[in-house]
Amino acid sequence: MTEPSPRLTPQTLQWTRALGLGPLFVRREVLREQQAQPAVEAAEFIATPAAAKPVAQPPKPNRPIPPPRPASSIPITDAARIEAIARMDWDELQAGAQACRACKLGSSRHQAVFGSGSTQARWMIIGEAPGAEEDRQGQPFVGAAGQLLDAMLQAIGLDRSADDPERAVYIANVLKCRPPGNRNPEPEEVAQCAPWLERQVALLQPQLILALGRFAAHSLLGSQAPISQLRGQVHEFAGVPVIVSYHPAYLLRNPADKARVWRDLCFARDLADAATTKEAAATRPE
Image 1 (cartoon, rainbow, N blue to C red):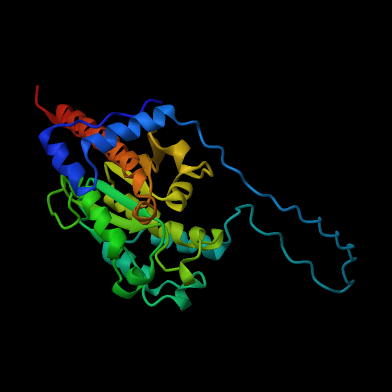
Image 2: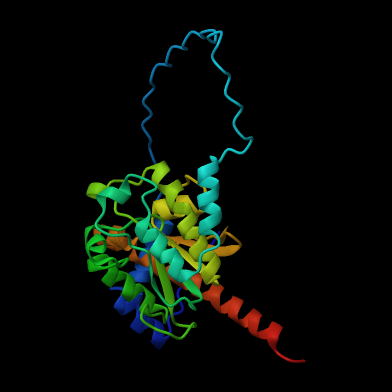
């Protein structure tokens, strides 16, 4: 799929400078991409010997046989927890996330990082997990990565501190607690945190989700494809369009990829503008 080209108007030139880009940089990057050969990703698989199957033992004669487990794959306690979270309002949800101890991260973090921004926002930004500074402040995307995210949002006319739904954003993470040492999230941790994020999306009902980073994209989309394959497409989570791009922390280490993120932002902005126009036309009196 061909990615949309940036619109090089005077306004967008000002925005690109906020991202550390310029029109010559963008054009040269496009030329380099056209000339470059596609990179081949390598993965290393370590085969482990299959464990020996235990020998089945006959049941003891006088021991009662336990009843079968319910057909649902979700344990009863987890199902009740998910149903309770699905009924919470914003205040209850934030208090519940702060008190959550469903996984081991609840005992190692300083505080949960629930989310921030306007609950009337049309855009929702979803990152991966809190870092050390986020864990201390209780806010998502602070520090150098947060400053870069602010520049990225301002480049397309958004502001995390704005109240206007057209300019406001709501920011959250897949995980509400910081993994020790900023290690990768574990599947159980992502699964235990999923109901909090799902309820945030349900309450916010955003017009668009921007997923930043590999774990955010994989968690929302249920895909293990690399970001390079997920970019430039419209995905979906809970009925909401999802655009995937690189995490600001990744861009701090790989600034050359800012050009790609700029095109992702243009793509997301055009998609949101089209949705707004469609909504306005649907509500316009005939």
